[in-house]
Amino acid sequence: MTTRLRRLAVIAAVAPLPLVAVLGDRDAAATGGQTVWAVGDGADGSRAARAVERLVLTSGRVDRFLYLGDVYPTGTRAQFTRRYGGVYGGLAAVTSSTPGNHEWPRRAQGYDPYWKAVLGRRPRSWYSLRVGGWELLSLNSEAAHGAGSAQVRWLRRQTRSPGTCRIAFWHRPRWSAAPHVPGAGDLAPFWNALRGHAVAVLNGHAHDMQRFRPRDGITELVSGAGGHRLHAVDGADPRLAFSDDRSFGALRLRLRPGVADYAFVDEAGRTLDSGRLACSR
Image 1 (tube, rainbow, N blue to C red):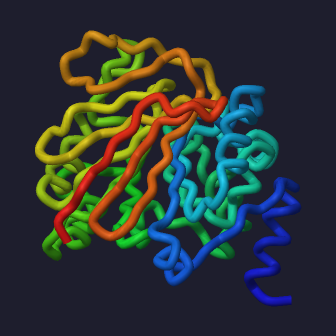
Image 2: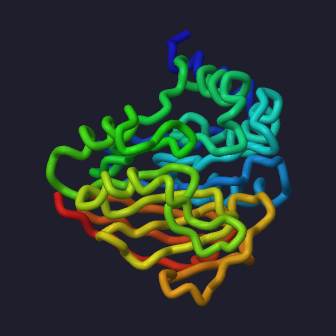
């Protein structure tokens, strides 16, 4: 049995859900781009979380699934197996994850062994990948992220080359209009390093959907309505371009070189907000 087949067998054992098809860059180029879904705060085994999972799995091609963190309530191995694997396990072969505040303190018992079984190696705390002509940067809001930290030094090296065709994602948002989950000022070093080098940031943590007006050329998209109880948003916040705190759902991105089309989609498949971001290559 090949290494890949062994890994998929492990994934199926963790969560016996149908695995989505994975297309390579050549296939995606032929069809005009790649599809990425992003959502967090849904691994609680609830009906709403399963509805969001069905939304993604039945949407058609899924080239990459970004899980934006939080496995409830404390991210133990059993909770990863049942509450994460039992909901999003069918997407494991195409998943890129970032840890949330709920699972990070117990990562040695839950996050690390779960993703090691899926990936065949210990998961990296931060990393990059290329999808649809874009660089996706997975950062870690729960690890050290001060201006002089190893993570931010890595981020500055990673964004040294010119162009803005980058999308970063991590758990806690730099900006938030949810009173229960205010913006995290400690994450300013991420934002400062991305200024002039990226056009979008994706976050969870706030259990709702928020799209902020561009700041420093960066649009922040909060996609934390993955299934765990919703958080109210101050819809009158002038920084917001869109918000929804009544619907569970996820963020869909269609990526092709130079262009990213985004849409917030609710669990019933209705598009609540959509638009396009362009980058300089």
